[in-house]
Image (cartoon, rainbow, N blue to C red; front, side):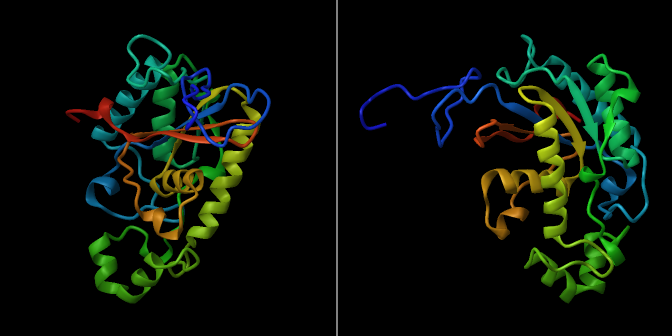
Length: 245
């Protein structure tokens, strides 16, 4: 600010722009986490909504426990992100790996497994004919299709989803969640493509930005939404709780 005046801040010590007239109130904070590891994750195989529905591996169960521990500490002296409040609700994609991860995290928060809300809006993309293949296998078998998919938000794998379709679905789920939990903090357990979609929308990236977010299993991305339309990305792919995993 050229006049040297102090920048306006929210109750969480955040400076955001644009600032609008009136009190924007407390933001809704979404803690968006990818599920823990599965055998497909460890083998580098694509696992979308129409492929296999693998459960967490033993290491994935450890990922979920670490995620639960870190979110349970939010709002207290042991928090790795001191300005992030403790979640009051947990939402998950209905796929097995996300349900399992969410239920472990919910237990750490003192919630029952049946208190985890399942929302199809947060399900992984369909990869069509690429389901269960590794990236290298896709390069070998479908090189032109892969290049087209990576170069366009509207191109889909054969029988799968275009990224624009995933973006629209995730945007709708995000809007419902923010509207339904004003001023609260909600943990969302979802998939890599959906995490990228949240960050892409929040930052207003161009199409190429969809591929520029690393999404590690059980990592946390934190985005705040104010009722006047303000948005702030507070953390992307936070992994301190996974150290040594």
